[in-house]
Image 1 (cartoon, rainbow, N blue to C red):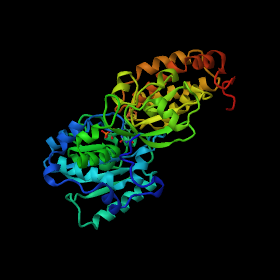
Image 2: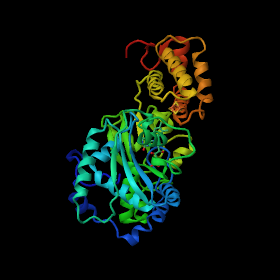
Image 3: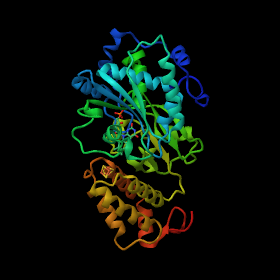
Image 4: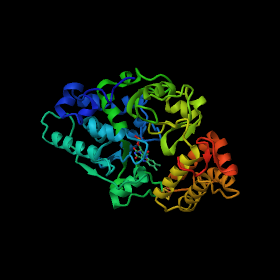
Amino acid sequence: MTARLLAGPDLAAGAESLPGHRARLGDLPGRAEREHLIPTLLAAGLLGRGGAGFPVGRKWESVAGRSRGDAVVLANGAEGEPLSHKDRVLMATRPHLVLDGLELAAEAVGARRAVLYVGSEHTQARAALERALGEREADRARALPRVPIAIVTPPVSYVAGEESAAVHFVNAGDPRPTTVPPRPFEKGVGGKPTLVQNVESLAHAALIARYGDAWYREVGRATTPGTALATVSGGQRPGVLEIDLGTTIGELAQWAGVQATVGSPVLLGGYFGGLVAGADAWGMPLDPAVLRAQRSAFGAGIVAFMGDDACGVTTIARIMDYMAGSSAAQCGPCVFGLRAIADAAARVATGQARQDDLARLRGWSGSIAGRGACRMPDGATGLLASSIRVYEADWVAHQHHRRCIARGASAGAPA
Ligand SMILES: Cc1cc2nc3c(=O)[nH]c(=O)nc-3n(C[C@H](O)[C@H](O)[C@H](O)COP(=O)(O)O)c2cc1C
Ligand code: SF4
């Protein structure tokens, strides 16, 4: 594992100060080199770390091409995904790396203002960023031109981090997605072209600006170069760590102190991702391109080991209930579809399945994707479909025999 974003002082020491950050990483390059930053990002092959894995340089190029010196950059640190912690850890411990990336992006795309969009539950991260902004305010040795940066804190919500929801909240105080197009890069905050970029993506850009694209590509073991933050759960040592992209799930399991050797199912990509059977998962490289080709997802770097005794049906029923409850409830698939899915999954999980519940769940998982204003229904139904595939025997046992194979008990009996 190569530490880049998380190199430096122990994370337990909290936020790195501006003098510490500068002494460790050196100054940002001069203006002449910074002018080539977009081609350097393209050459580096950096992909966004907020979930979709879109090339960062291409996004900067699109916004720069539309800006008349009035663009906006929004650093997305909403992190509403319950299984993800990496963005809050990064903001709370390396705030200046995120701010370097934000200011570099603002300069490169021609932005007049910038927004730090930080989930209101991430109080340590917010405090670290506020302190860091204060340090930069008083800084005389700064390389980058000043751009006003406002911290905006959306309410705790899964969808508030979706890019059109983030723009909507900044514009109108409403954290619900809007129909797109126009997309934020065309018309976003204040109606201006807006670059919405995950905070980890910005922090990588800050290192690439210093050390170059060839340096960035030195690490990475499969198709996609570089390192990524991952949030690992389900083992004896859960937490956030930085991995070389291409590290296998089996290697990560060892690091996390997961007991099983061949492995039980693994949830990749969080509530928007999918389950992979343990036998397939162990050798899989954590590489966005490879996982996409295998119809799986790296997403925002979530790897949750399910454990041999986990009841996949109960786990997914809980997640479906959470997804139905946290949708913005403004489109049909969410208002009707996700609630119906959550209710049917809860009945199956608790031994109260109606005759056709499992069949209807199979049908829904293919029919409501792609029909909402945002990708929430796609994420939920993708996860449901993967669960029915990986935990097929458990779903069937719950549906037809009202038994939980994992716990060897009647479905609905206390765990
Ligand atoms: C329901 C939903 C929730 C999302 N939440 C977040 C989030 O909390 N943080 C984030 O960076 N991206 C989130 N995204 C992805 C953003 O829409 C956007 O793609 C991302 O911020 C772009 O940054 P990146 O290109 O650096 O990945 C979410 C997407 C969806 C559909
Ligand atoms: S699909 Fe769901 S979460 Fe997305 S905008 Fe519509 S109601 Fe909201």
